Image (tube, rainbow, N blue to C red):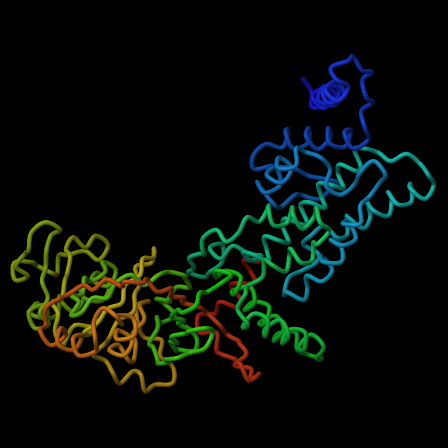
Length: 469
């Protein structure tokens, strides 16, 4: 049974009920019902996710498109029996302003939409009958443009993992289809799209900066860099929270933020270009006082193995233990010259103490990169202007002060120092987990309007542009 028959039967049932159960003449199929029939058939044949080409353009919104039309029972969104709705022009205006958000209007079918609309409006001006199939194509393209643009505003135009950037995306932010569907029904499309933008004032300041640089001659490179940093804001949660930790990797800095204002700042050491610190959103869950260091296999094989071949006593000198994954092994029994870097069979662990590279305090947050914040005995590195020396984890300049803030209400500063002095490892859970964001900003605007440009220490700007093309 086709959808057209289903619609006809539904209309007849409504007429029969409203007529008190009396037999009624079947109502004619409306023009919008014919458009709906085409929409249903096109999406049914497109599969999930839909593989669909409309008027020469590929749809890009994936499963959002069938979700949208399922929600409205495949009824056309941009026209009725009288013709096109005013929402069409509202959307086109919003799409033409996509450049203001550092996005590209050309990504949202504008050329094709202008062509289809010109043809349909010419037919309307001649009072010629409109084609239900053509209106269905227009409906699909307009909806795909709305959903794609909305998705780009909410999550970003590119997928970070397709670029060179080590990145963990934030979780689902909003009911994108629901927000845009309500905006369409009330003809508040611009407001619905605006609600998808990052809430942080830092994004709005970059938006204003982009407008200024696009008016300046010979500022294309700077404008592109600003747009890239706006994109990175969209990879974060819309609302960063009332308080959080922000690590700005290219700035080598950490801020503790409350109500959008930094209340604590410190220098950090981040990953070197060959071991970059990832960009991520996570939650600090616990702090470890006097942590041991479980050496990552890659570091053990690539960096420590050559040392052990030259100096088998290195492990004992640095209070390190060896195991085969089950039992502890006497390092003197191992012929390190025969151990392969490609298949390193041992696990190395360094006990808490003054030589431990994690220092006295370790700040833990779950992430797929297994990175964390930690203290360090190498204090001299914080005096250097460029501080990309780690294997991806972040070394903090003021670990005690940070622990005191994070553990307030749990452990006082004196108790933290007492525990550290006991040289026994201790794990302390936070009563209120604290959001943490590791970000990669190469340009940002301070509250007073000062523009800060930071070096692209990992070369992400070029990689991001390749991933977005």
